Picture 1 (cartoon, helix red, strand yellow):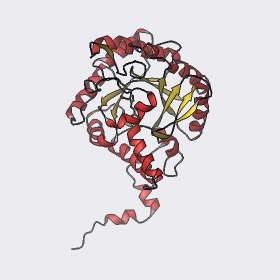
Picture 2: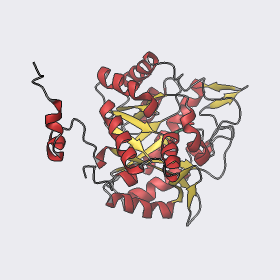
Picture 3: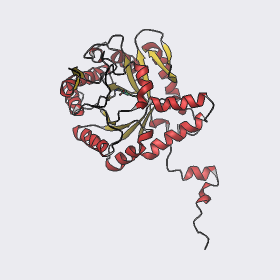
Picture 4: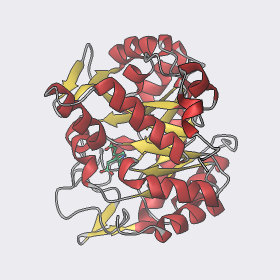
Length: 325
Ligand code: PBG
C-alpha cells in the first residue's frame, strides 16, 4: 500500500509551513555584544570581525539607539581598558570602562537589558582570567576580585552579570558578594559550560586578551567532553546561577540539547567570534548566501534548545524578514 502519510502535504504552501514551524526565531531572543574602549568619538571596525566595532561610550549610545530601533532588547558589554596590570584592577574600578559605559547607557536607555561580562583577561597584563602565582592560575584568590567586579557593575546599574572566567565556586562567590551589597534581585547568567576553543580567536584580537603564556586549558573545558558540561551546569545552578550558558554554540549543539533536556533554568548559547568571522569571510568571497546562512545558524541554535542567543549577527538578523519582531 502507498504510504498514507505524505509529509510533503504540509510543505506545499509557505503559510502552512509557517503554521507548523516548530522553531520561531524572535528578535527578543538576541543579546548583542558590544566592545567599549576609552576616549571620545571612537568607532573602529575590528579587523577580523567585519561589522563589529570598538566604540567609545559616546559612540556606543548612537549604536544602541540603532539596535533598539531594530527591536533588540539586550546587550552584553565588554570593556577594553587603557592600562592592564597583574591583578586586573581596572576591572573593578568605580570609573572603569564598563562601569562608565553602564551608567551612561542606563541613563539614556533605562529599559535596555544591560548584561556585563565578568572576567579578568581583558584587564590583566598576562591575559589570563585569574590571579597568577608562579605561573599557576589561582582559583580561590580570584573569587574575591570577581565578587568586587560584580558589585561594581551592579552599583553602576547593570541588569544582569555574566561571569566568564571558569573558576570553581565563582557563582557562590558572586551571589554572596551581590547579596552582601543589597543586590539580591540581580540575576547571574553563568558562562557555565565554556570550552577552551579556537573559535575565540577574533574576540581575543578585539579585546587584546590573548594569554601571554600558556593557554586556558586549566580552567576552560576540554571540547572532547560532554558529561563534564552537565556537571559544570549543575554546580552553577546549585550555587545560584539564574541563567546558564553553553559556549561556543555551533560545534556544541549537542551540549545545548543535553543541557536543555536535563535542566529547567533558562539556557543561553554564545554564537562566538570565530563562528561569526567564518560566515563573514565566506560571504565577502561571495561563496555563500550570508542572509540565509545566518538565519539557518541562529534557528539551529534555538532548535537545539537555547532560549537566549548571544550573537554578533543580531543587528543584521533583527532586520531580516524571517524574524519575529
Ligand atoms: C572572556 C571572554 C572570552 C569570550 C567571552 N568572554 C574570551 C576567552 O575566554 O578567551 C569569547 C567571546 C567570543 O569569542 O565571541 N573570558
